[in-house]
Length: 171
View 1 (cartoon, helix red, strand yellow):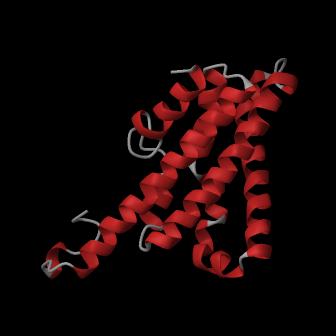
View 2 (cartoon, one colour):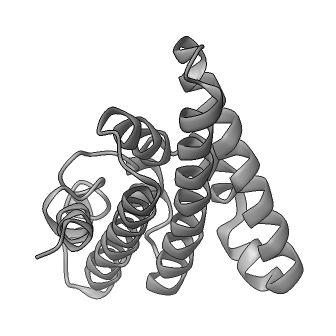
């Protein structure tokens, strides 16, 4: 298997940001009440991860070589900018989705999985292609985890569960 395929499969399944590294738990628990909303937030997160990976690689390669102590702040600015771009696009092209995601769309900015992606790709010294594949695997891994949790929660809502055991405690 090629290096890019290995990075993708590893990030998607083995080292999943949410299921293995416990990053991105805020949307994992907060938005997973409906499968459709979980899918859509996962796709939005994937786009932000792609933008963050591109921005982080560019900054790290060309700008931050002399000032590495500014990496975290620079990555946060790149992530916030990416979220704003995705938020404006969703608001323009899908107002219904914009209303469904509500407060969780701007909260993508604080999703630690995205900052983790930027920091991990820097620490691993990925090339541009590897960074993009890493972002796709990470985003698709989150997109996989969110609907899985939503499906569990939807099934628990219709299951015959005693009132004492209902809610997130059962999951």
